[in-house]
Image (cartoon, rainbow, N blue to C red):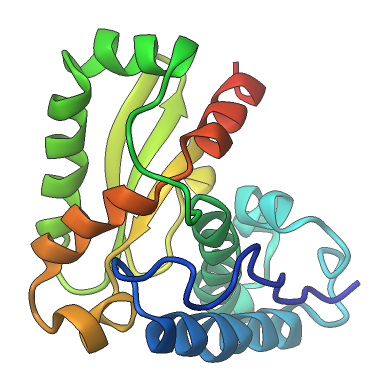
Length: 201
């Protein structure tokens, strides 16, 4: 079954003033749709055509060489953006609570130290990519990935990711990627992140 772009779980302008309506419209309707169209075309007729996108990203070695780049880039783009939309909300921001908060403090020293580390990974990602909070074999970690690469492909579980491709912020923030990341914290839905954390335990 072909993939499709999930509808945004909020209105295009719901994340303003932190992320503007026009960026959300173009990012969701145009960029995400293009990833979906291209991964569907690349997987058409293959044994993985009906597999969940997570399984595809874990099984890139099973994709023919000629299609692997297209599947990694566009399948990653589909998964990454689906998680990104679902990680934000109009009532977001603040700090996590409960087991997730404890794990972040235990791993990074404090929530502020974690924020600094995730921001650093995003600001220093050369070119396009993502900064992630992941759960791996040893606990929590912050990692960066180029392009639409995803931590699933290296055995980790993404809990939260910030898109640092220029199309995610350039209309509003131009070249000020650090300012965009600072604003993005105001829309993070920590309840959703905590659900992923619990599911990955």
